[in-house]
Length: 159
Image 1: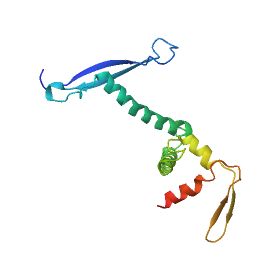
Image 2: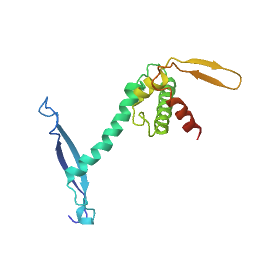
Image 3: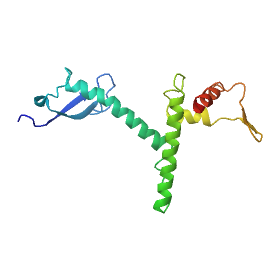
Image 4: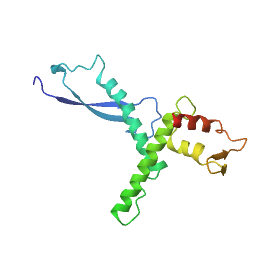
């Protein structure tokens, strides 16, 4: 048995939530542990390790939710495979672009915003666009709550 990997399953119960269904507040996780080979749990219980890893899993699930719900990535209604593949490519490019914008907004109120919030507060705005041969001006309304954010964003995008 020395040196063999053992898999253990643990049940994480979320006690702070209001219980609607008997199994709603339980999360099941599995962890490989090889304490005999020197891979200890760093003094933490397996439940604590799984709870810490659950935050990472939850963040990945939030990114998938943003792709599916906010960017409508699952809208592949074309008949040809290549057209659907191209639509997925466009959705992935939009997600990468909005993730880059989110990173550029570090230190602002939108630093941890979801994609739908970035779309609503930065992209779906009523602005007057004036352009010349060398410049494009965006004229925001005086009551626009994020008009100060656009110069900050453009400066960070140029850097």
